[in-house]
Image 1 (tube, rainbow, N blue to C red):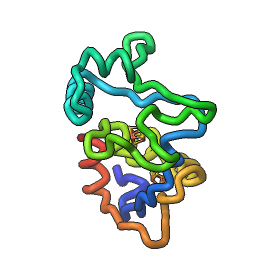
Image 2: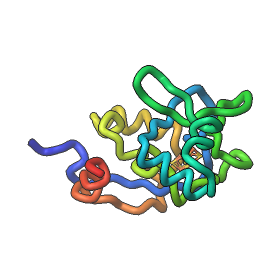
Image 3: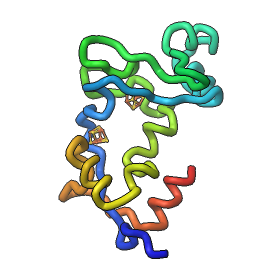
Image 4: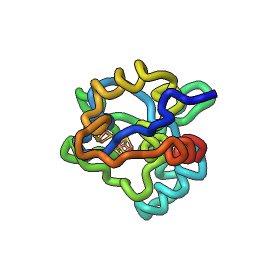
Length: 135
Ligand code: SF4
Ligand code: SF4
């Protein structure tokens, strides 16, 4: 079946930081990602759990801070302190299955992310998008 984004999509992260703050949410992480982030910070996994992780049912999420619900690793409202070691959820945005469910869900996401459909954005082919989706 032909996908609605068969012609590809445009996206370029401007680094505005909006997707890392603004409302309560979850940045889901797994043990492997926690180990990578702990290493990047030079702390043990145990300390990382204590400082930065909350349990939500069976799942693990990064914590938030401040009145704007900033991700715990957001600095100056824009910069990810762990950018190189950020988890998959952050690396793959906005190419998430529910964002790509339809043109409408993609356009809805574009209302909150100025990088989606950005005029100077990189064009991602369907193959590139699907490979990011599957990572
Ligand atoms: S909202 Fe979009 S453009 Fe802004 S930091 Fe997040 S991904 Fe990048
Ligand atoms: S880990 Fe970094 S990229 Fe991911 S939500 Fe937190 S600040 Fe944003």
